[in-house]
Amino acid sequence: MKKLLSFKTMITLMLFVVFIVFTVCINSIDVQAEGPRESLIGLAHINKAFHNFIGVNMFLYELTDWLGLVPILFAIVYALIGLAQWIKGRSIKKVDPKIIMLGCFYLLVIGTYILFESMVINYRPILIDGFLEPSYPSTHIFVSICIMGTSLWMIQSVIKNHNIKFTINTISVMILAVIVVGRIFSGVHWLTDILGGLLLSGAFLSLFLQLIKITPYRNKAYNSSNIDKY
Image 1 (cartoon, rainbow, N blue to C red):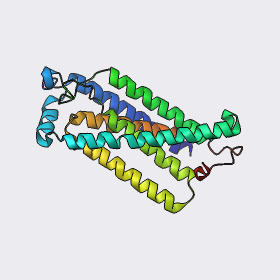
Image 2 (image 1 turned 90 degrees about the vertical axis):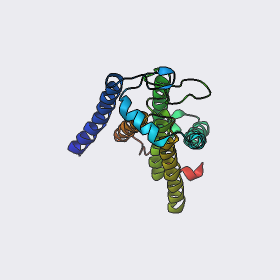
Image 3 (image 1 turned 135 degrees about the vertical axis):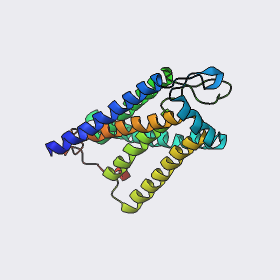
Image 4 (image 1 turned 120 degrees about the vertical axis):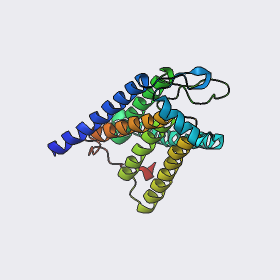
């Protein structure tokens, strides 16, 4: 078990290292003023070729923007469940440890989102409402995968009804697939933005799976593990 955990830990570290190295490459290899208003973009030939190939589809951009609200709604539902447990038990100790761990993870995701929205690595290949917007990594993909990925684990852990579980999981995966594929072919991101978002979200999900190994989410003091009661 220890060897397996160590291997999974190495996978997590490797994903973060690959993301960092990939980011450095974008900032240093084939950097050219190929973006709007001569904004710089790394790996310019690859990014430009991919963008010219797929073009721009604003319908997919708007669709994925709206679908991006679904993961936010999932996060809000878990927050409300945790709040209800807190109020009912009159103590933070009465809140399901899974909810607390999920909340801490989402705060980390939000912090990372704010970081990359304020720290511009490159701009989008198109102007949005006449403005340049940060584009790397695709935070839309990053946040959606992190929330929906952990939500699948949460649903698996707390919902006992197999039909409900299957239905929610199926809808979640379909929505996530549309968000990722739609964002790729919307043309509002460079190819490297998409890859960066996938790498970073993969690293975060791997980290989350490591954290649940050391979190006492099977706390026997907490008896209401079924989310259906809330």
